[in-house]
Amino acid sequence: MTEGPKTPNRSNLWTIALVAGVIGLAAGAAFWNQIESGGGMGWVGWLMIVMLSLITYSIIFYFGHRFFEDSLDQYIVSDTFSKKHDWIDLETETRESGDRKVDGWVAHYRFIRTMFAMGLLPLIACIYLFWFA
Image 1 (cartoon, one colour):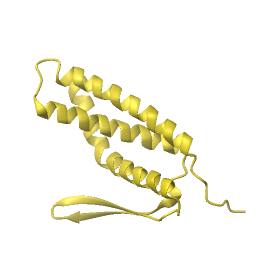
Image 2 (cartoon, rainbow, N blue to C red; image 1 turned 135 degrees about the vertical axis):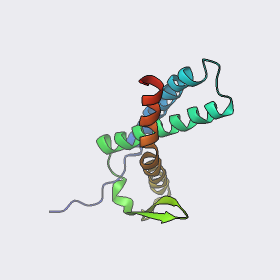
Image 3 (cartoon, helix red, strand yellow; image 1 turned 60 degrees about the vertical axis):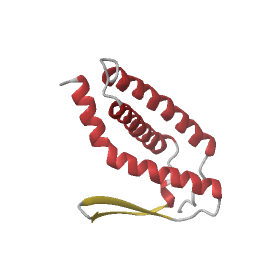
């Protein structure tokens, strides 16, 4: 027997987003302590803090969804990596669910997957450089 499509539990998704947001803010505070507290780097430091916080949020949301919800993957049709003008581009094709709220979560999840794919290695490099080098 095959299972039908799993309906996303929006309260679980909101909880995962809230927890990921809190952890992302905590990571931003930790990076602020490393980057800006010793004299700072100006607007570049603040940009780095915001981007590292967003990358941390995307990682936590991605794995939180994978472990606790895992209902939005059914709307992902394909992922395609392509090279465009010396850049590597990730294109994710999704299908619509028919519910605007679910489609909004699918769009959020699509963005998170892209941030996760593009941001994991820079985040690991920054953690290494700031705390271990």
